[in-house]
Length: 143
Image (cartoon, rainbow, N blue to C red):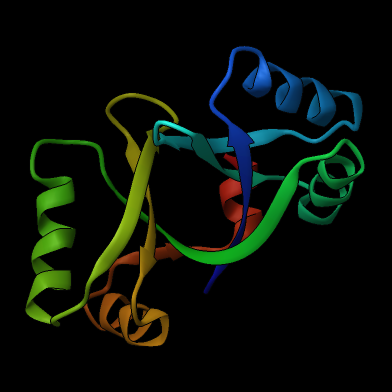
């Protein structure tokens, strides 16, 4: 199962993140998870939203450069070692994590890890074989 994620490229200057949030809010797009990575010149905002196509269209119409990629969302127990257990499985399979980010919906329950792998098909098969819960985009947005 893959989750659609949008990536927005933005100049590294004050107010740009607020502009994106305002555009999405005005278009009734709900952000479920996000990650911001930056360099000296620009940033990459990665978003999981409830309305991917509407978000992409609205942001493009407002001058943002937007791309769409697939990621894998896995659910793990929210306790010490939850992430380590998943990473051990990934390492044993020889998979490379290009990037990841995570969120917890309610402390003490489950955490959601968002991964981008170099080999998405192998990653999904590996995680399924290890009985790791993989979430759909709808499931992530319903949390």
